[in-house]
Length: 137
Image (cartoon, rainbow, N blue to C red):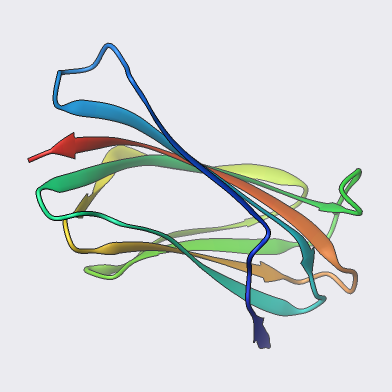
Protein backbone atom coordinates (compact mmCIF):
# COMPACT_ATOMS: atom_id res chain seq x y z
CA UNK A 1 0.00 0.00 0.00
CA UNK A 2 1.18 3.49 -0.68
CA UNK A 3 0.12 6.59 1.12
CA UNK A 4 -0.85 9.65 -0.86
CA UNK A 5 -1.46 13.16 0.47
CA UNK A 6 -4.98 14.52 0.50
CA UNK A 7 -6.11 18.04 -0.16
CA UNK A 8 -9.20 18.60 -2.19
CA UNK A 9 -12.23 20.19 -0.57
CA UNK A 10 -12.82 20.66 3.12
CA UNK A 11 -15.77 22.33 4.76
CA UNK A 12 -15.96 22.61 8.53
CA UNK A 13 -18.84 24.29 10.26
CA UNK A 14 -20.15 24.96 13.70
CA UNK A 15 -23.83 25.78 13.82
CA UNK A 16 -25.82 27.39 16.62
CA UNK A 17 -28.26 24.90 18.08
CA UNK A 18 -30.89 24.34 20.72
CA UNK A 19 -28.39 22.44 22.87
CA UNK A 20 -27.01 23.70 26.17
CA UNK A 21 -25.45 27.20 25.90
CA UNK A 22 -21.91 25.79 26.01
CA UNK A 23 -22.53 23.21 23.25
CA UNK A 24 -22.30 23.62 19.47
CA UNK A 25 -23.30 21.16 16.76
CA UNK A 26 -20.26 20.44 14.58
CA UNK A 27 -19.96 18.92 11.12
CA UNK A 28 -17.03 18.40 8.79
CA UNK A 29 -17.27 17.57 5.08
CA UNK A 30 -14.20 16.18 3.33
CA UNK A 31 -14.04 15.31 -0.37
CA UNK A 32 -11.10 13.94 -2.33
CA UNK A 33 -11.58 13.52 -6.07
CA UNK A 34 -8.55 11.45 -6.99
CA UNK A 35 -7.60 8.59 -4.70
CA UNK A 36 -5.32 6.23 -6.65
CA UNK A 37 -6.05 2.48 -6.84
CA UNK A 38 -4.91 0.35 -3.88
CA UNK A 39 -3.74 3.30 -1.80
CA UNK A 40 -4.34 4.71 1.68
CA UNK A 41 -5.19 8.34 2.39
CA UNK A 42 -4.59 9.88 5.81
CA UNK A 43 -6.45 13.08 6.65
CA UNK A 44 -6.07 15.08 9.87
CA UNK A 45 -9.60 16.27 10.61
CA UNK A 46 -9.31 18.44 13.72
CA UNK A 47 -7.24 19.05 16.82
CA UNK A 48 -9.48 20.00 19.72
CA UNK A 49 -8.46 23.22 21.45
CA UNK A 50 -7.66 23.27 25.17
CA UNK A 51 -10.78 24.00 27.18
CA UNK A 52 -13.05 22.12 24.76
CA UNK A 53 -14.03 18.55 24.02
CA UNK A 54 -15.79 16.87 21.12
CA UNK A 55 -18.47 14.21 21.36
CA UNK A 56 -18.19 12.32 18.08
CA UNK A 57 -21.56 10.98 16.85
CA UNK A 58 -20.83 9.41 13.47
CA UNK A 59 -19.16 9.38 10.07
CA UNK A 60 -20.99 8.96 6.75
CA UNK A 61 -18.91 7.93 3.76
CA UNK A 62 -19.33 7.21 0.06
CA UNK A 63 -17.06 6.28 -2.83
CA UNK A 64 -17.71 6.81 -6.52
CA UNK A 65 -15.92 6.55 -9.85
CA UNK A 66 -15.70 9.85 -11.67
CA UNK A 67 -18.05 11.42 -9.13
CA UNK A 68 -21.16 9.85 -10.68
CA UNK A 69 -21.00 6.04 -10.65
CA UNK A 70 -21.01 4.42 -7.18
CA UNK A 71 -17.94 2.26 -6.65
CA UNK A 72 -18.88 -1.37 -6.12
CA UNK A 73 -15.41 -2.30 -4.83
CA UNK A 74 -14.84 -2.95 -1.15
CA UNK A 75 -13.35 0.12 0.58
CA UNK A 76 -12.32 0.69 4.19
CA UNK A 77 -12.56 3.77 6.38
CA UNK A 78 -11.24 4.00 9.92
CA UNK A 79 -11.10 6.67 12.61
CA UNK A 80 -8.24 7.23 15.05
CA UNK A 81 -7.93 9.59 18.03
CA UNK A 82 -4.38 10.41 19.10
CA UNK A 83 -5.30 9.11 22.58
CA UNK A 84 -6.61 6.41 23.21
CA UNK A 85 -5.92 5.45 19.57
CA UNK A 86 -8.08 3.32 17.28
CA UNK A 87 -11.76 4.27 17.50
CA UNK A 88 -13.62 2.36 14.81
CA UNK A 89 -13.60 1.13 11.23
CA UNK A 90 -15.97 0.03 8.50
CA UNK A 91 -15.64 -1.89 5.24
CA UNK A 92 -18.20 -0.60 2.76
CA UNK A 93 -19.36 -0.64 -0.84
CA UNK A 94 -20.82 2.52 -2.37
CA UNK A 95 -21.98 4.23 0.84
CA UNK A 96 -22.26 3.50 4.57
CA UNK A 97 -22.15 5.07 8.02
CA UNK A 98 -20.04 4.47 11.09
CA UNK A 99 -21.99 5.54 14.18
CA UNK A 100 -20.96 5.77 17.82
CA UNK A 101 -23.52 5.00 20.52
CA UNK A 102 -22.69 6.24 23.07
CA UNK A 103 -20.80 9.10 21.46
CA UNK A 104 -17.00 9.02 21.65
CA UNK A 105 -15.22 11.79 23.53
CA UNK A 106 -12.16 13.57 22.15
CA UNK A 107 -10.49 15.68 24.83
CA UNK A 108 -8.77 19.02 24.35
CA UNK A 109 -5.29 18.74 22.83
CA UNK A 110 -6.08 15.49 20.99
CA UNK A 111 -6.59 15.02 17.25
CA UNK A 112 -9.09 13.15 15.11
CA UNK A 113 -7.56 11.39 12.09
CA UNK A 114 -9.42 9.71 9.23
CA UNK A 115 -7.95 6.98 7.00
CA UNK A 116 -9.44 5.70 3.74
CA UNK A 117 -8.26 2.64 1.79
CA UNK A 118 -9.19 2.42 -1.89
CA UNK A 119 -9.31 -1.32 -2.61
CA UNK A 120 -10.49 -0.69 -6.17
CA UNK A 121 -8.41 -1.00 -9.32
CA UNK A 122 -9.80 2.41 -10.37
CA UNK A 123 -9.29 5.92 -9.10
CA UNK A 124 -12.20 6.88 -6.81
CA UNK A 125 -13.75 9.98 -5.31
CA UNK A 126 -14.52 9.76 -1.60
CA UNK A 127 -16.85 11.98 0.40
CA UNK A 128 -17.09 11.85 4.19
CA UNK A 129 -19.23 13.82 6.61
CA UNK A 130 -18.28 13.75 10.29
CA UNK A 131 -20.83 14.82 12.90
CA UNK A 132 -20.40 15.70 16.55
CA UNK A 133 -21.06 18.13 19.35
CA UNK A 134 -18.32 20.48 20.52
CA UNK A 135 -18.51 21.48 24.19
CA UNK A 136 -16.72 23.98 26.36
CA UNK A 137 -15.36 22.23 29.45
